View: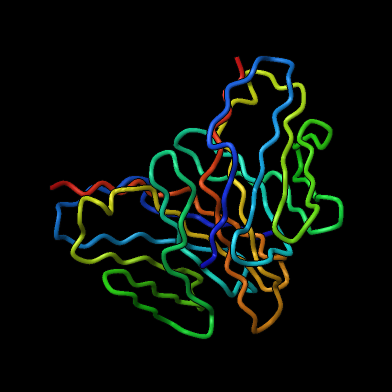
Length: 113
Length: 119
């Protein structure tokens, strides 16, 4: 089955700096890679996703890059703000997996004002 | 769009009682719903996958007689924790996905979670 590893487990940055979270996956058949943001006591919220037919996707301050050959994808947050502080999870799945996601272990991002 | 609700948001129950948690997709039809359990500072652990009108598929190690899942409609799934014990205390999260087929949208959206405390 799929295995997703996420690094780092914690990340502390100064407000305004950039933050990068990296994930690797094991199943080359995986073709959909969402990122979720989870605030304390709440459910995960989909913030951006990428499919295997593209290498990069951007939405305002967040971007995701995908390297299919190396089987890794990354989340980039620029101009970080204190409200970006949360736990971020990457995930991977394959079309026919019935939408079942395999999650990374999560990254706790702390943005210091 | 793509809103998933859960009810209740938190519940405290006594050991031995049963608790039902509802998960609803409010603005789309979810052919598949998932139930997760999350321990503090850990990732999401998939408990089971349920498809509308059929029996749920449980992950290894999850007791199906203890965690009863019903997916009666395309917008509602329920998780019942039967004969709850303190070790069942956790954060339970559901998610809803659209049907997965090549070329179609298959994002998965999560509910806000239910904090269960068993005393």
